[in-house]
Image 1 (cartoon, rainbow, N blue to C red):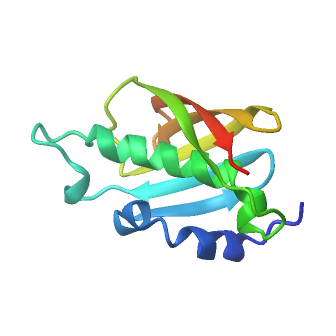
Image 2 (cartoon, rainbow, N blue to C red):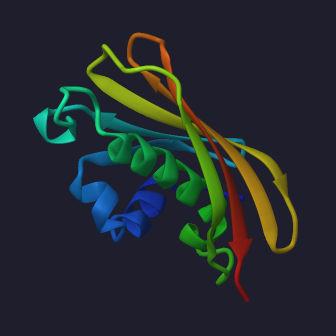
Image 3 (cartoon, helix red, strand yellow):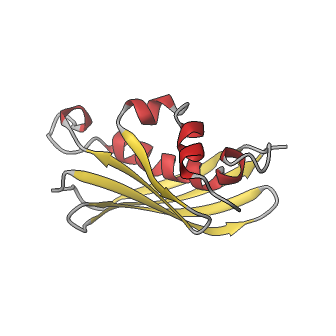
Amino acid sequence: MNIDLERVRNFFKNDRFATGNGMVIDSADEDCVVCGLELCAEHRNAGGGVQGGAIFTLADLAFAVHCNLALACGETGKLTVGQSCSISFLKSTKGRRLKAISTRISKGRSISVYRIRVEDDLGAEIAEMLANGFTTG
């Protein structure tokens, strides 16, 4: 697959919740997708830590981009949606930026499985998500 990163970014600009909260697609290829988030006050919870929803949304964006690369590149009309996911929050971040790294575990005709690791810019693993996708059509 020929991946045009700007075309992928343009497709996912319509993911308004993620992009409206500052999340960006750093890189994308068939083997790995990386999305990032510069942390600011709006991403903090009442206790001062990074809100779990912000971490989850970043991981979910990396998952969505990875399982829909062919659609975003115009190679297929089939959308893959989240079927289920499980996230484990491992530690709080001391960093200023998070990145979510998605790797594909398996991909079938209609079911796919991805592992998404969330790290901070200091190298700490903050969360890990296992996500299952269902391809429509």
